Amino acid sequence: MMKTLVLEDMPNLFWQKVNENNWLGHFTKDNSIAEIVIIRTKTQFNKKLFIKYPNLKVIIRAGTGMDNIDMKEAKRRDITVLNTPEANALSAYEHTISFILALIKQHQKWKSNILSNNWKSGISKNWEISDLKILVIGVGRVGTRVAKTMQILGAEVLGVDPYLTNREWKEKKIEKITYQNGLKWCNLLTFHCPLNNETTDYFDLGTLDKLENPIWLINTARGKIINEKLLPKGLQDKMILGFGTDVFKEEPWKVKNYAKFKNVLVTPHVGAFTKKAKKRMTFEVLKVLRHFAFNGKGDF
Image (cartoon, rainbow, N blue to C red; front, side, top):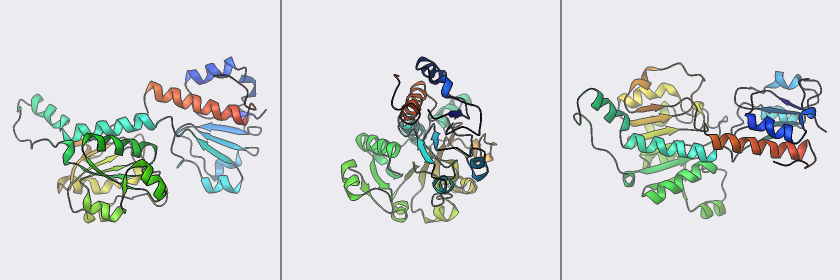
């Protein structure tokens, strides 16, 4: 049996199922014999870390993004890297929808007005969903759900995803567009793409200048996709009508002044922070373990 090392805290349910299947004896704390390593978000699996695990064969990323793993080094060492892509998709999609609705309905501004005894004074009228022209960047598990929901609710939606085939676009019933043309068309931009060399600073000051319409901006993917330096300018110039983000370049995040704008919503990377998401993550990890470490044996 392959020895497994867990580098970050896993939910109690995970260990409960491990015990029920009598798998605990196959877990180790010894780097030198670990063949499977389970990580989450905090571990940066870089070249130096690979050296610590000479017998490593599999990395299981409990979560979706794999930007904290040096994929080139993993490939060079012939190490399999797997994640749990379905676990967080539903909760991240819901978090995105909540941002969209809270921003266009100005929930935070209206609350501020009431608390300051100003009632309805000094605030522009709300938008309706049918006013939205949404550009979805990354039409995968989360982006597809966001796109379809907003289509049903009456918004216009276009997508950007260089990895989808024409057949996949047709099956999703979402029209594709290039990023550059999409920037000229949209009034709401939402990111659901992975972080890599191509998407780091994907939205920067240069991108801001290419917009033809003021936009609502949302990011529930990875913080480094949007260059934070553009936000004060975009908000002050009103080219960014509102900004909602669950992710930041560095986490925990040191509060920046732009967060104090009433049309900015920030949450501490909790898009997947639901009981059901944690349960799905646990079972996806267990499924991978059963396949690699326990020859398909076990019940959960």
